[in-house]
Length: 317
Image 1: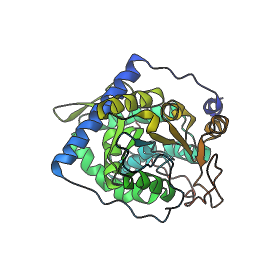
Image 2: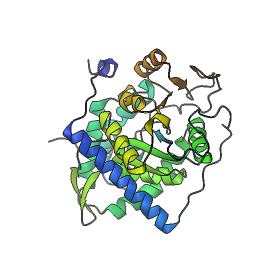
Image 3: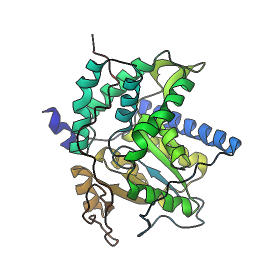
Image 4: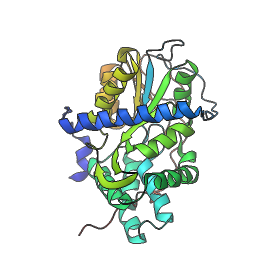
């Protein structure tokens, strides 16, 4: 029965915790952008040969337009949290038994192409227990190494080209993800994006407490984060674009004027077709199914096998 949960439509509604999570993510993104501007550090954008068929929302000179990209299975193959977990395992943050226990979650995610909320929640809860007591700067430093080791080669060239098209038009581009904001910020910086909205783990004096601020940035909480950021940045959401693979992100896709379904799961594909949203699929060599604009060949292939990467979990007592 658990395997059928991701096929079942869910209601999306804002709660006090989702609003709090969204606002916290927006504040974190604002702070990161300000720090980046103060340091005048600009990361080089990754090169790509996916330059054809630019997104409709990438209008040059439109300062009130921006783009929001989901991370897992949209920008990156697999889940960032799982890749991060693999790096933590290598650094002996937990044992091999934990790694093996959660290897099947990565396999499920890769094969289903969809998030299982219970799996992701379990991984996030466990991650909080793992990082509790560690300094934020320590995990950021480790995150930089893990990106090079496990994430850089997982970026979809096609989705990267879409983000670059918005950047080339002078627009700002944010990742919006349930992954930890620190991990999301590293990925955004490495890709030359504006910043990231992610799940905010509470820290006091630079040390993780093992608690979240609000709730994971998932589903409706993502939409609340984008609303808060749009208000702070004076963006017109009707002129903005959003990209995601998951039906869990229908709230954020419905929020903008230019929604795109990227590598969509079955439920999102059906919803996108019903709504007339544009679709792109980079998981195979075949031409992507598209609505409203010409078809383009998808690039990149799903890496085979299940890399046991989540491993960020302790056995429950």
